[in-house]
Image 1 (cartoon, rainbow, N blue to C red):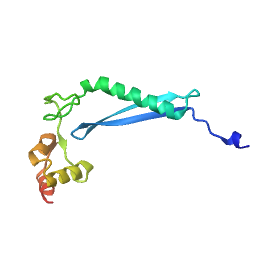
Image 2: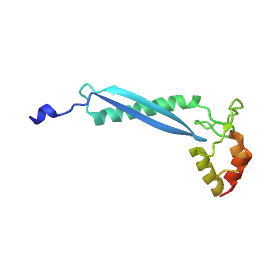
Image 3: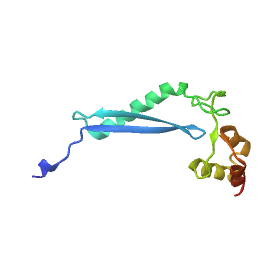
Image 4: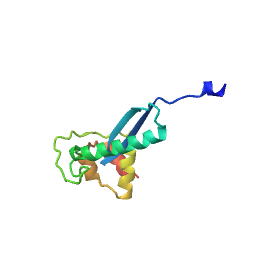
Length: 126
């Protein structure tokens, strides 16, 4: 009776997220039909294939001005549109902590975000 209730996996989905820097990430994923392949073996193969794809494509990823792209070249990206830094956002909280710890300064934040007078005051008010 126990054999009848046993579930058989049919597919796996494998995803990884890579950090490109400056709060930018890229997600890679792959889906496999198992066709009798053990799931652990399929996950190992999926990881190899996704890592290889990332290695091939990383040369094309560009990041923000004054940062490095994934393959280490310094790029100017003047077309990057600055957006408002919202006070209740996760980015605001992370930037406030980084500012307090001296990891980043206000000018660097201003390069990537539009800062209102209120936002600047809240950032500087540890």
